[in-house]
Amino acid sequence: MNKRTYGCWQSLVTVWMAMVWVMVLPQGAGAANAKYVFLFIGDGMGIAQRALAAKVHDRPLRMDGFPVHGVTSTYAADRFITDSAAAGTALACGRKTNVGMIGMDPEGHPLASLAAMAKDKGMKVGLISSVSLNHSTPAAFYAHVPQRKQYYDISMALAASGFDFLGGGGLIDPDNVRNGATVFQGNAWDVIQDSGYRLVTSKKAFMALEQGCGKVYACNSWLPDHGALPYAIDARSNDISLAEFTAKGIELLDNDDGFFLMVEGGKIDWACHAHDAATAIGEILAFDAAIDAAHAFYTKHPAETLIVVTADHECGGLSLGYAGTGYASLYTLLRRQRLSFQQFHDRVVRPIAMQGMGWETARSSITRHFPLQFEGDPTTNPLVVNDREQEQIRQAFDLSRQKGTGSRHKRRESLAYGGEDPLTVTLTHVLNHKAGLGWATYKHTATPVMTSALGVGAEAFGGYYDNTDIAQYIARSMGLPCTAPLESTSSRAAVVP
Image 1 (tube, rainbow, N blue to C red):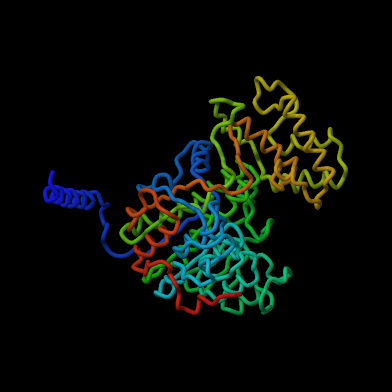
Image 2 (image 1 turned 90 degrees about the horizontal axis):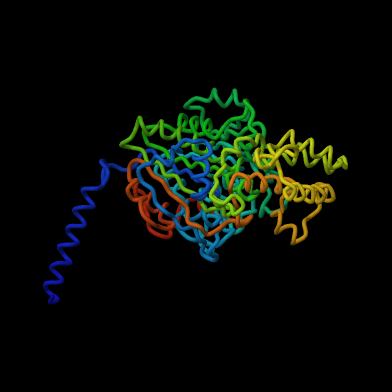
């Protein structure tokens, strides 16, 4: 075949592929920009975590029913295994940065976020998270700091953001106790309220909020863990769920100029760091219920809405299979766990350590609060521990009792228990292994994650792409600039040293 003939064939193939692409585009592709945009981020939520949650509860997740799915790489600019600061910046701003940096490129230049650009366009903006709103992922949508632990400075940026609805967790270090601020401006809650935000902390007052109430910061009354919502498995009836925050956010943000709403399931990651599969499942289901609220809105505005669901990284190296159980999958055993690793530690382990409780008394207390049993036949009841497992639990009990609540682990014990309480982690390991699950690390992994999309512009999210592309695709669907980097010229890009 000569060069001219080859060139003709190449042109014909190109035209044919373009025609096929046009024919397979979803109805509405290439139409008006997305007016209502949702970005859901499951912190630490890998593909295995999603699959496990669906399997344990024997139903498809709402996010898994979306028509478009892709696989997304998560690496940072300076490290293959990312952290939430660098990954959050990639998702919010469309640019790689170094671990620990928020809303800045590796050279320290500020980056505009999707949320800030949406606000500048005249859209309303909301941020919701199950962890504190000055934590890394939500902070990437409004702050520009070189260190993720500058919690007070991040809180000041939140007050200055002008975003319309803030919901979920509270704040870490609102009084700058850690002395990380460049300039102390007073209690962060006071500064936020002085900036025009109405602070709502009761469920009754929250549910009564209506359109026209102005800027709102709504958080749960019980924030038991670093300003975060309680784990879904521990939640009380008077706690506000992630789905309720999302539904109310939609109600308050809805307007003719559109809105951008980011919702983070932040404690999926925390549960995976602790190897607590049952608690992680509860967090994923709570996250999926929030997606349900967005989907209900989508059904009323299908030609104007885009919903994107992704993760910032995988956490824990979860495997759906364990050498000790072979090909058996007993994942429904996880349904028997009734409280999180955090509450188990607070209710059971802390009294054991403080009261010098003996093994027999402790064993009885463990059985009352955790599904594992010490009496019976392990060959007929999988929840009964065998001799080897009981010895592991006994050794961990001794370590927990010796350490009390404040001493630091030695390196060997840190590798074994991940910096968590030895007894609590050992119990979750035993239950996980009986169910047929394994974990590779107490840290993040570089495993790619799944991204799912529905609505206007969703077709862009199929295939294999980087996390920075997600911000670009969303920006394009909204009619916003999508060049890299998304450098900001607005006042929201003020950099804190």
